[in-house]
Image (tube, rainbow, N blue to C red):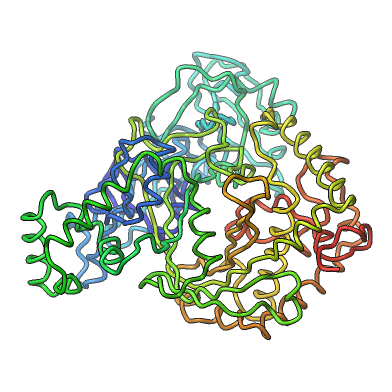
Length: 624
């Protein structure tokens, strides 16, 4: 990571964090600095590696436009890995560009509050220890060494994705003013709450009285804070208008940035071995514009020991396959969702189509649960590719089933102009796919108690949308079938994490749920797979748990654990139609909730009473 304004290296991030925690527009809290990741125009994309996944690229183009040419990894320097690191070399500056944010800093000694642009603070950077980069208050009255300053920990944001520095001058003067301070940020007490923090102006002749920060939050904040300026600091731009009220938030607040990402599994799409090879090396072969260029390209790679697999095929056959693949990327593919092809591959479970990155092995249903499951597929190897296509603030994308459902006014773009590429990461791991028995599921859905429960959940869904100013007809309700599959997925993930030693955050779910009336046909299944980019997800530990006897034992244990919750009877009696609007029934952190990175819907649409009888509801259980 480099600091755009000064071209210094100031810290490190893992590639996966670019999608889930610290992507474009996010504030990164470093040891001595707070910085914002800038838009894609500032990225040195030539240092990124192109990632091949045609299905995902098609989906990204559907969301962002046809001008997107590539999926690329974040720019990374390999100089450190090769040894002999030189911080003054140009390669040391390769990384993700950032700029200081917020711009207002506080001296911890004299409590002086001022923006960086005022010239009161000076940057100190050690090229050999980039994590020690910091600003100092060079004119502080403290004797001896000037103290390090810290970022002011208050910001303002709005639901339309704007983020801005806290309006300190406006706030303390209770409106627009020509006074420029100086300001002091005093803290009284040890609680650190906004009520104990006071900002005061010491400007000559200024009569503004000190003001507590608690006035910027809650109902009082709605009356005292100005209208949003429409600022996008990661793009260095302002929107023309924004009708939202500024909302005070803390620096590092979890709702200040939510990434919007799309993901796809690398499933086999070719019908022959040559097609699979072309797909595997598509990022290189797609550069060929004719058969002659292809021959030169292959000769160059094979001369250095690469692409040797193509030696047994003729240039004409390879070129025909490349042309067939190019012609296959038609407009008709753009309207196709990402999960239906994956469902078809999993449900058929044809191991003869296994590839290097995708290997299946079907096994019988779990012992003791043959009535409810049709088959289990052990995914001994898989590759997941994820792309960041935007982000939101305040409003979480996990509230929506699909990225396309997120209202346009909530989505924030990654660049000032239409992007030519998007940041992408890939993870290789393993997983277990379970397919529900469709007749048993349809029979359960037709029960009167289940139908009534679905209607009540739909009412809760409408109420939840109305409280957030959303149209419930545009935000699709996933249905009772999805809730059952989702609840079972969480119960099984928790069981695997508790009894088998897996870190809960290293497992993820991928749900396949469509009703009988869907034009693509019904779907009812789930994939639990490893999502951590480390060795834990690639050693076969999860696949070994999918054998019929072992998996049957774990399912039985998972269902037994969901019968009672440590929060019962409160958990079992929870009703989303009463109290604050929410989208779950009998579920809480003690029974079904999972880490946010593991759940695809932000722990919504969960109800353990759909799995087994609970203290409050006895008639809804699928596993009677």
